[in-house]
Image (cartoon, rainbow, N blue to C red; front, side, top):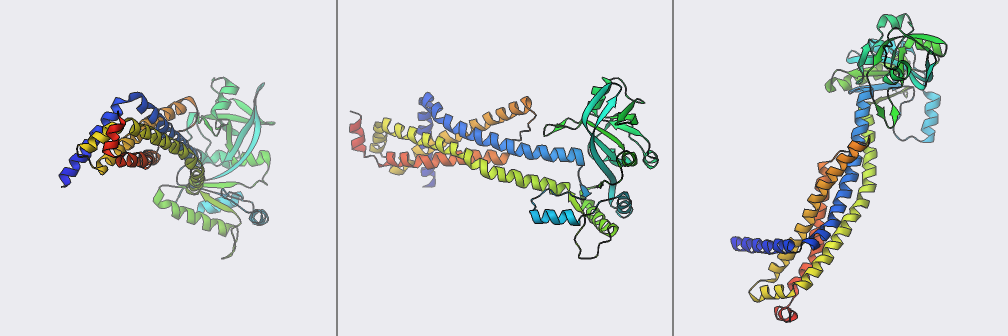
Length: 416
């Protein structure tokens, strides 16, 4: 019995496929709505996934993996006005002595750096580069993140301790100020202060349209001599691996509380945030975007389903005699129903697959032509194809049901 049912379904499928192949133009026009719908879902999904990938990679490049930041203010989530005002009153500046204390009491920290930042113009002879990010840091700064030295070296502990006026410049300063001639040993100015170039950072590119190469690094002590010691610094740390990260984060947090002389139960007078929290926040943010945008793009699939239904109704009308003949030869209602359901499903699923291929090609073109990252996700691919196939079945039910209800005698007369 099961074998007989299988043969009947196979025969229905063959008839459905033959009908699709016999009406190529109509099939193409039917597929077009599904293709556009699936491609829309996929391209939008690739953009959302790509945004998350891009941000996570940028965070890893700049901050490093398994890393954390301690700062006076370091919040990335939502905050009420009351919470913000309380934080302004309660949080304290972070000083160099806090950095040294945390450094001495975080055995699972692989690297720990102190950092200060400002924005200034940099001069060399008659040339000037504006809005340069000036970073004052300890000597391990180059070991955190994915920055590398292209030429020369980074400053060392001795130069930090003695407040040497040396600097490492970013790729943009190298190109703008020195036109690709060696800058090593040359003197640039931050305001009126001269700094000797000892190294050049490799090219980093941009993040969210902002250059990562318009920067200059100087010893944190030289930064304080130049711009004053009243600024609150940030402390950045990393663990050697993911297994040690939570321990390192806990040690740094506890050490910072001791450094700020906090009693048990008192709120922190600083904020600490990890790259994992930043990535989680980004994931939540892109998830909200997906929840709003994807249902809108799925409407195009519904429109494609309506096109499938209309075409299938036309097909039923055109093939009235065929349906009547099949019924007269012994085909049951469910056989006719299977035939038209299979036909609508194949149309929609084929449109889904073609739409997936088209969306992949469009995503690659966008990624090549723009700085935008596009990540084609199998989750969105399965969603798009599954929904398109489901829509084919759902919108094929009425035409299939209409075909199965036709009276064979009336259907045979209809052809005359």
